[in-house]
Image: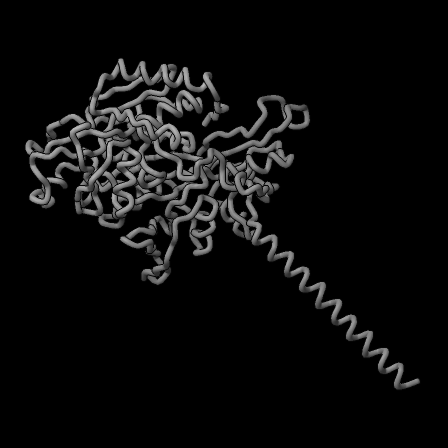
Amino acid sequence: MMQGSSRSGSSFLLPHLSMLVLNYLTLGRSQNVSEATGEPYRGQNISLFQVPITYQDRMSFARAALACDTVGQGLATWFQANFSYYQNNFRSSGWSWVQTTAAIGLGNCTKNFFQYANTSAATDVLCKRNQDVFARKIQNSSLLEFSDVCEKEQAKILRINDCADLLAANITAFNSYSVYLIATGILVNLGLEFRTKTTPDLTSANFALCIDSYNVSQSAPLSAGKVPDVFIAPVQFSFGDAVKYCRYHNTIVATREQVSEMMKSGFESCSWGWTVSGQGILMFNETASSYSNANLFEDMEQKLLYPACILKERVVNSWNGLPVAMVETKNGGNLTFDIQSQDMPNALHKCQSEGLFLSSLEELNKSVTKNQLTPPFMVWVYKAKLVLPRRNANLKCGQGYTGLLSRVENVSTLANVYCYRRPESVRAISLVIIGLVTTFILLFLILITTLLVVFYRRY
């Protein structure tokens, strides 16, 4: 994500106000676009990211909202996208879902149709908590403020795709002649210019703009100011043997981000080596016996997702209402253990601590059985990658591009491997060494004292 410097005075206001006027003239007084005055100040403190990373994984508005709720702080608003584009120089590819407000009259609400109304006529916002839908009084404010009203009661503002749920709810609790506010989806394109589609098909497949829950665009090791302890194996392995080699040395295959961080301390190599790149996968149940998944992102290691560990081609997952995993043991029984959501490095270590390894997406697709996963199911899987950390193009290390070079190869390809040693392991080794040295010194002092006592008594 590109972050531009904040502007002040007229240089800040004039371009921003001019674009608001332009959008106002372009869109008209559509109920689909919120023109709130309170949002700019909240918009300055947010960062956006786009999901999914692949074109074929694009999603409907309903799934886009679910994905952003799962891996971020929700779907961005139109104003936040507008502000990020003009003030933070944020750019994304293709059309992306964002949300804004719409007003509905319940009198003509059917499964596939809402009666739209003027937003200024609405006096209540519809909130949804689990399967319950309820109304709350509002002031004339912004979508963010409407959302706050619902969030205070551990709920979210009702989205237009929830019409069937609304019909299934206790409609008699609402006034059929009243006008209520809900959230709906519109499309924005943050390319060479900022463009908006105000009346899209909500079932069409598009990208989504999510609010970053960490408000950073850097990895966890960088934000924590830590340099990973990464080393390269002197021999070549297939990826499977590379995993075993690192495990034998009480380490784990390094992530691409960890090697990148190590380069900042001067680390480089002339050899291609195995690493892993974290993929965040969101799974959906299509029917009682089938599912689909969306590859939302890669190399965003600070995200907290549930590790999908694998053993003997059987996936063990950590979601069944509560984060619980099922592991196939040697005697054919099942072992259950609690797994909390983890960042990518800790997800790898969590699986290894149970004698497992993080699943690949291919293994996940091959191993999932009926009713084993309960959506929404957000998991970490890995993609094996070869990397070459080259800081300088010289004869010793070969001419060519510099930086962290990477490529995807078949897991049977022979290459070196980059292993990562956890700081806890380093500290543990240090403590053992310190303990041994201390014990040796104490024994030496006891021996000297004993000899002195014997010598004193004899003479």
